[in-house]
Length: 268
Image 1 (cartoon, rainbow, N blue to C red):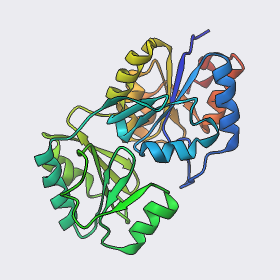
Image 2 (image 1 turned 120 degrees about the vertical axis):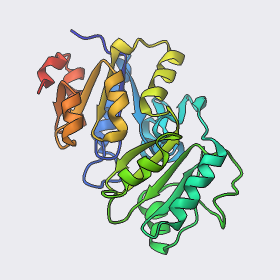
Image 3 (image 1 turned 180 degrees about the vertical axis):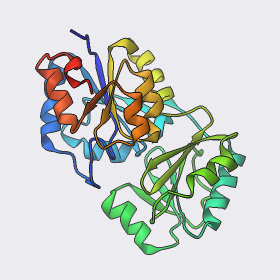
């Protein structure tokens, strides 16, 4: 039987499927039961810390947080690690995204999202649907904190945009698909896998005792880093190919662990 100490889980496309913006309450019950067994749950997302705490309200002080695709990790409301992007590179990226007529820009701060919307519907989406803390600014090049994660929102999808932005910036920053409508940009070498390793070191947890649920390009490195990478059945093919295990719903995987079943039962 595997010894599990930590279970990490992506949000959008994994725990939250089909555009859902609220977590199934069953998950909170399962997280509490995992805690009783000495297993820590970690939200591993591109989302901001304040957004994740809101989503996990019933257990918000009982879990660990890997935010902004690894740029920020938090445990017991204390920052464990934070990574910043080179300011010159960040401003260059923002200028290009701003000129892109198909893109909206989101700059993730530690506790808020900075936006300068071209379309009021983008503000409504971020503030009222995704429910981020939002700070409206006139100029994204002049912010009160350092740049860490920057995102491009493409209402009609990222297909056709990823390759061009990766070609422009892959030598200077990490470029990943964060969802059907999102391109994520982080400091060079920073991704969920890097933040994961940092947090595990702080918590003194052996990486061999970890599980990760994920579905998309920005989960690739953390799925590879964890001992037991579990792909969602509706993941893109490249992600399913990475993982020996697969589930339709995260609740199914958590239930298997709670019942003491071997993860081999989740083999593809």
